[in-house]
Image 1 (tube, rainbow, N blue to C red):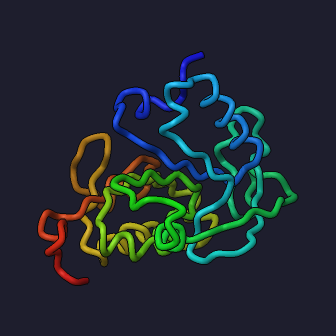
Image 2: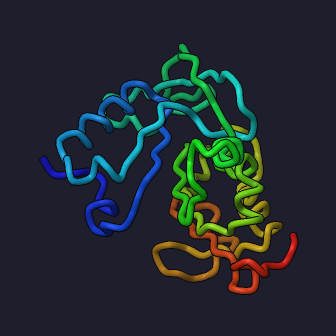
Length: 198
């Protein structure tokens, strides 16, 4: 069986910590990794959510049988009407207690809760400046009645530069109405041990 972890397969120096709050999806991910033994030692699956505060959260699984990836931390029309409880942590707390190493690259796909995940790793973002790739889904912002540029504005406040993954061009206002992936990078001036205090 081919792995659905193409980056791990392509880059043999890569180690991944994968956060998946859905018990079913986490189980499938673990089964997939177990069938690809060469990747097993470089990947850890944590059945938990990342957020801006640690604690118990309500998690609503997908009601789309063909797409388990639309689950999330609030009710929505494409999620089940009932919730399961999941444990949430901030990334900062997991790094500060050595549960996880400091990341060089962060990939976020959390169906509209990107801002909370990023706020929960503010210390990591300020002090270690990892590259952040994140999904931008306008309809999720509309569901939550928050600004479409809230995630981008937060990252910009931390001196990150935001580009479109597809074209590697700066994000413009017109991009905010389209579902796509963005990449946030810290300029060279903010990298390294002599980085500017923010």
